[in-house]
Image 1 (cartoon, rainbow, N blue to C red):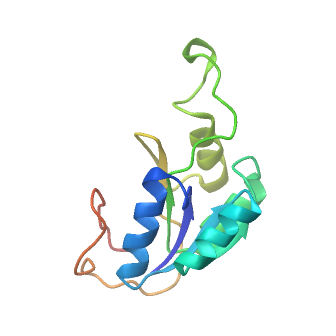
Image 2 (tube, rainbow, N blue to C red; image 1 turned 30 degrees about the horizontal axis):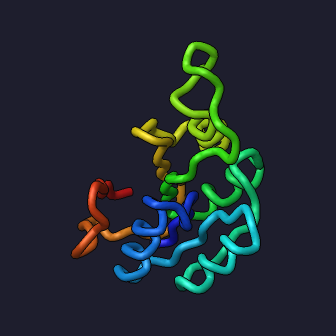
Length: 136
């Protein structure tokens, strides 16, 4: 499965990245900096230079992938809860970039990108923890 991952060098995302690669998935991971890009490449994934504010990049990557896993947090702290429109600014950008196939989650959103590629009807033998498999 081709997966686009945000936050691939973070606390949660680095574990997700390792699990996806160990299970044989192809991963393209968003990287804001040269050091993050180097870490993603060293892990065995392809780095995609950009940030959560680049809606066009997010939309292109989501459309090209079989699925998207969003684990990134914004580079700047979010506004106080009373002034926010969504759970996190990155959730709103993710929904805007990938709508209508985006589902809010605890720290962002997960996306099932539309694809004409054939997917297996059964889940992988060992999906990463806290994941849910859905067929086409």
